[in-house]
Image (tube, rainbow, N blue to C red; front, top):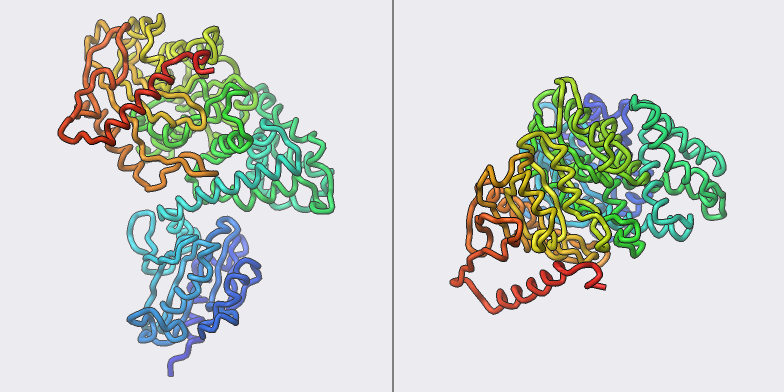
Length: 624
């Protein structure tokens, strides 16, 4: 006679063979119960009888601290004939019906991997489903390769499959933004931290959590002793990078201010282990998985931007305009970076351009040696502000390498320029072939022009190198000595007019310039491609900023990049035009209009664009 215990024992044996019970692996396998409060609460009314008054539990509940928002549930039935009902409406009698029943109770708080198994070792049937957090809709569980999972695999592979799902990725990003606001409020109200202290506390804590000893012991320290242990863990991680001592000293110095912040070492009634302990605990639970498991978000840079926004700042007070992540990714595609390139960002900020370049370059790598070369010797950056320099280096360290080629100081300082031009690697001289820059935006006529930073970067590149910059639209429309200098020494390949609110909440209207270095425009004697990239599909949502709400950005991005790479000309979208230094370098000045598709809404949009264009072309003083 079929016996469900046989099915459970079979499943348990497979779990053991795949390492789910290994002491070295942090996985919790629970049977028909859970010690995790959030799961107990979620299942408190999940009885399969449908009364909504009693708890219900599947045969197995599996979790891992490395991915706290993922839960795996397994429901067993003795007979293959009891695997699935036609309408999935009999949770007490069928394995698939039952496991999806539990998933509906768990999905408000977790991404659920649901596994239904029926039968015995001689004849069994398995089904695997994914219910993203915040959804009640299940779908087949798919591996990152795109193939459906049909047999039980190690926990790391189940987590990777869940992380690969686009809906899960978007939800995680929304959760991250929401948590960043929560953490900001805690740091501001409880710890009384300043704008500059908050991102340093985040970056320093993530570096400290990279140390296994600190990660496992931070919770045992008294409040007064934890800051010193926190600082020691950061120093240890920095020392293990084999950086020169002078660089280690420069990197560590900004974090010492956090160590001595008086509020962090105080034990309170609400936080007996201190506020720093609570900050570490919050980051370990909510953010560390993005670095160690998901590897899909520029966490330190993302947090820095969110903290600035939530404090009501837009970076103006610090002279910083952080580049949105989708723009840094766009740069890597515009330049078509690959594994043989060497990339420089002379205004590195938190390292967003370098991270996106590294990600794109690694897509073309096929060996471990190539990956090591990309991380260790093909990413260069310069950053003047000590805080930003520490954050950029932290960002690179948390991704495995790249930090040795970051220089602190002005991008105009001769030692930094010489270091970039004379950069060497295992293959010998490695002068940068690609340059990315979002220069400091001038606040007055006395400030250095944004194009002066671009010229400086292009000078660092090898002959024929690709330079990409995002600058105020006024740099492209107004006559300037810098435009003349650019054409004298380099070739303008493309200028793309960007969405007016790409840097919201700031009011800077921008464009992207693409140049070939050390090929004078007069010599190349070529037309320039102009793109009208005003609509990226992002919309503003309260507490989230500009987001890809309708998930159209990948298609828009790919269409833009393909059009640019092929120099396609489309009415109302792009045009080829030969220009001089006195001409306007924007698509709006040369595009043909496709009148056959013109509507009243288009007319209104053009008027709005013109108004924004006029404002964006005005000097900062005119806007005040």
